[in-house]
Length: 212
Image 1 (cartoon, rainbow, N blue to C red):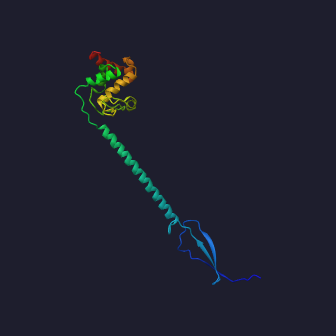
Image 2: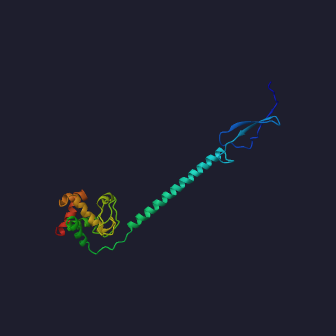
Image 3: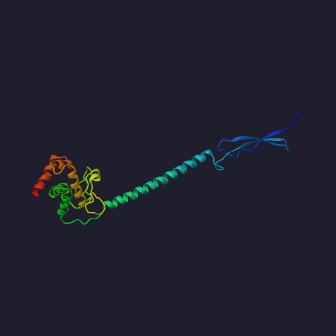
């Protein structure tokens, strides 16, 4: 025959416990005191941290991580800009006359040196090395569009860098480009360089004055 044992029930004091994750109920019988204790067990990830505090901490950690990534990206961009700036500020000792450069470019690509000089004159007045840039983005002594330079740029002076701002590199690149555009068909070659009748006439006037 079963024996009935009178017991009393107590609930553990939870007033000072802050719940951060789902909890569970456990029953425990104290046989000496005939007390059935109902205990609410709390699973916490960080002792004493509420759900609100946890959310704030995770948001803070995420923001700090993003800030570190952004700082690293800014550092890399700054270094890249510094290197680019250093390249654009290279100082060259240009010769007093560029005729020798035109003639070497002619020997390499077959374009009449007087035509190269005429193009140089019309583009920038036969300037030396320069980072001069027009509103359309054409840059340097021979006024190359950067995308065209990437395709036809030449290291004319042998320093290991094809520099759009270097006069020797630019003249060699112009000879290469005029050749690719159709030279010895002068009209076709110049039209590829700048598709303008006025431009063609200006260049040819200068070239003829040089004896071409």
